[in-house]
Amino acid sequence: MAVTVSLVFLFGLVLFFLLRSKSLGYGAAFIAVMFGFYLASTGAAGPVNQLSTAVVEAVRNL
Image (cartoon, rainbow, N blue to C red; front, top):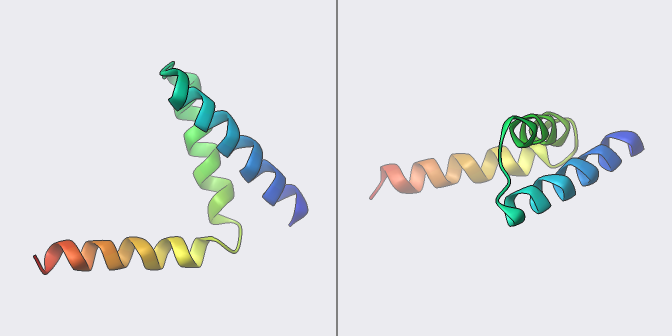
């Protein structure tokens, strides 16, 4: 679990700086995929899924 949280932090930090510097390419896509993969392995997966479901339902009800 500690390794997963560390990797989520690392990939999230790298992705943040790539987006901020606007140097997006294949490397940034790989970082984004790995960030999502490791984020799904943490305890944050449940709240992220609930949030996305709530947003989809809110948009559908507009």
